[in-house]
Length: 270
Image 1: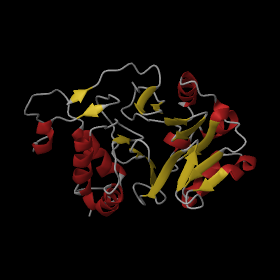
Image 2: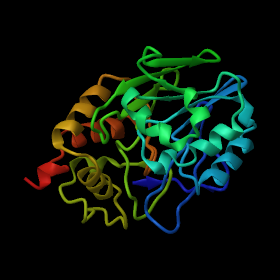
Image 3: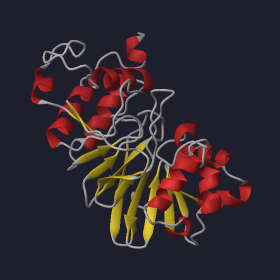
Image 4: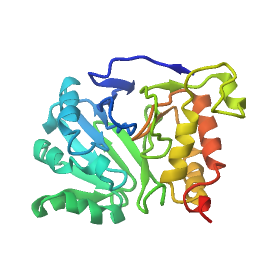
């Protein structure tokens, strides 16, 4: 593996005009990754983060040159507080007259509890949008991945760059975190990820697999999600937790490994 060393004090571009605006977590291993997608003078925020994260996330959005009133949509791919907790803060700052909060219809029931009653009118469901949103000529498409890990979970696909914002899928509670991870050829044939044949000190794959076994509810739900993603031309995976993958062969490998992963959720119990 080649773990790219970068400074995480500023936003980092993960694809064309797509920025990671999170921070390096030094206390826990659960790194939360909000993303900013910019097109012209408009922007969209995906999985904006928890309430304690808000100051850092907004600072990095400003560092890209985008002001809050240029943000036209906030996308939340499931209703957990680690990505939705700052929603009321974001809404107070993002004053674009056409601002929308986009999520799945079932999830919006839960998202409404993050908002004051007067702000709940901003909620829109992805099915109402025809499972796509276009801003400044850029199109994001939405694909439902139910029970991966919540009933209303979905992923977001940037048509231009082939970037998949995968929510918890492909995520990890990384014990040694870097934003970008690249596998080496011997990873594809390795039979013991805990004992690297090249004696590398850290392998991210056990953390990725264990995360899915603990967070996803079942093998069937995870396999279905991989079947939804497999036909897409994914060139970058940008998960809400863990690290970004931008090598096609790594992405294809992970899809196949997760589709066949055993001991996931309830299947590990019964």
